[in-house]
Amino acid sequence: MVEVKGGKEFIEKVEYGKDLLGFIEDLVKKRRVKAGILTAIGAVQEAKIKYYDQKGKRYRSLRIDEPMELLSCVGNVSTFEGDTIIHCHVVLGDKNGRAYGGHLDYGTRVFSCEMYLREFEGVGLKRKYDQITGLNLLDI
Ligand code: ZN
Image (cartoon, rainbow, N blue to C red):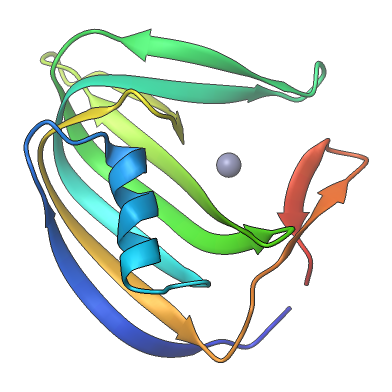
C-alpha cells in the first residue's frame, strides 16, 4: 500500500476523431502527470479492446466496428522503467444495451468524450514485472 495525496485536477474534452488512448498519453505528457487516476464517459465511433488471457499470459484483441457508448473508462497513470504507462479499462454499450469490456487499446476512435484526470502529488507509482501473472504490476 502507498498513501497518495491528490494534486492538480483537470477536466478535458476529447475531440471528435481522436484516438482515446493516444489522447490520454499526450494529455499526461502535456500536464506532466507521472502518477494519477482518470475517468471518462462519452461515445466512440469504433473500438479496440484487449483481454488478458491468464493461462496464456498474453493479450487477445477484440475489434468493435460500430458506434458504442463509452459507459465507463477508468484508469491510472504510472511508470515502468521510466516510461509512462496508461492502464485503462473500458465498458462499452451497443445499441441494444449490451456491454463489452476490456483494456483500452489504440484504435478506439472518439465520437465525444469528457474526461477527469487527477494527479497524485509527490509520489511515484512504479511498475515491476510479476512472474506469477506475467504482468507489470504496481511495485507497492
Ligand atoms: Zn488491466
